[in-house]
Image (cartoon, rainbow, N blue to C red; front, side, top):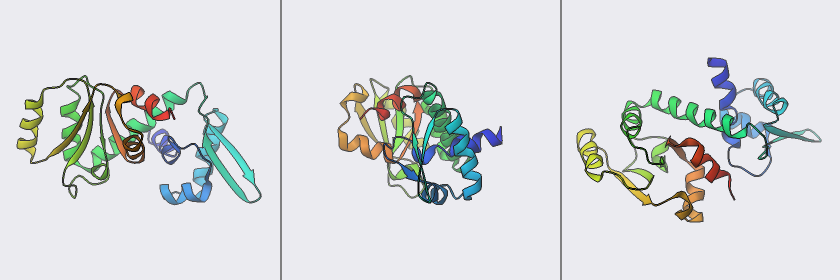
Length: 185
């Protein structure tokens, strides 16, 4: 189980990028030695999830956007990212648990993704109708402040905001829907 989580986390820096990324850059981002990371990436290349290109001494990788099981691997990767962050910050675990009672598509984005304690507020994108009083009660009980962006559906998000969300996000609800939206140009 731990090995599978480690392997899927190697996809994280490649998510939603349309350009090739060098092995050394991936190794730096993930803080993983080249040989270990190369094994993980080769696993995904064999599964048809990644493309690999060798140019001289450079080894480059990119997500294959037409891979049949891409969505399933990306959901696992996103869920592993959320679980890892929840294990680091108990407040995030409480927030995630609270929002799982909502049926809305919901994600956290911006600076609070990396550190809730230092964030002035928690940027939250939520689709559809929701109980605002429940949110206010949660804010009061846990001493947090949500900055809520409420939209009818994900297609209402501006390109600028979408780019910011893709850069830093944690998907709380409806992972498949959010991932499909992020993959669209």
